[in-house]
Image (tube, rainbow, N blue to C red; front, top):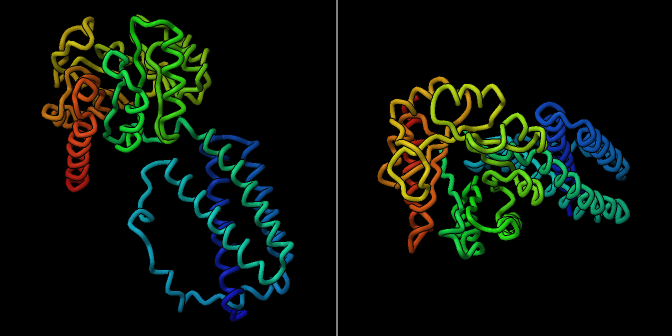
Amino acid sequence: MNISKLYQILDANINRLTEGLRVLEEITRFSLSNKETTIKLKNFRHEIVTLYKSLPNSKSFINSRDTGSDPGKELNRKSELTRDNLQAIINSNSGRIKESLRVLEEFTKLLDKKISMQFKKARFDFYDIEKEVLQNSQIKKMNLNLPQLYPIIDLVFCKDLKMVAEILNDAGIKITQLRVKHETDLKFFKAAELLKRLLNPEITLLINNRIDIASAVDADGVHLGQSDIPQEQARKLISSDKLIGISVNNIRESSKAVKLNADYLGFGPMYFTETKKDAGEIKSLKLLKNLNRLSPIPIATIGGITPENTLPLLQNGGKLIAVISSIFNTKNPDKIIKKFNLIIRNFSKEKIKAV
């Protein structure tokens, strides 16, 4: 192999690698405020640079750099031009780091097999660091302010949780909730445990009402009603990185939930529903609009929602479209999810055009 081309590959990938590490370092330092993981990333970055510099003639690698004639500099996928949220930045840069480590591992075999093995070890070491970063950022892995579908899994309709998990995974769902009424604690726990294991790690799983079960299965948070454990007590019982959603019926309850640092508000029923007998009176779109105007946190609308009546909710400030029976009390829940997602996606596109 042309030695200049080899040096070019090594130079490009050490830059790509250290840039990706620095991005993660900034995230753990400033966004996640995690000193321990930040130190691990910084030390790992310095170790990689030291290892790279130990390669024969490493000081001359930079001389092979030729960005002007590099055909790869114009090759950007559309996905590289945008990032939806913090999790997307983490995933993108983690992938970049792992790919670069593999390239360095392979091509340094041509110079020094022992150093190549050290790059291989570094690649596996990074897997552990990546896992730690992902765990720290887990609750920030999605943007609740983006309009999206929020399927609520109710055991009344969802008997086959394996099938439910497959449907949600395939549909690219980002958030879901497990709701269990009139069942034993053991059945509730086992259902939560199974979903936690089967759902994609990218899906935020919340547990309805039960903080103990949410903690036991390490769910991503809880959703609480006005008659459940008080919000301020709930926050003491679960770690600060977990989500808390609060059901509200009016501006007063909304203001209190926001003041106590709720992550989102549940609001409804928006339409007639038979799923929850004690859902209360139907809420108006005008009240939803006012609530959205006054609330700094996103609103999850719920109650009697179908693909046909979703658009007015989005137009009046609803961000999370929470649905139970319209999805799971049907023969083809996957097709219904596609309908919902198409409506939400088209709404988001039109909103972007209007800006």
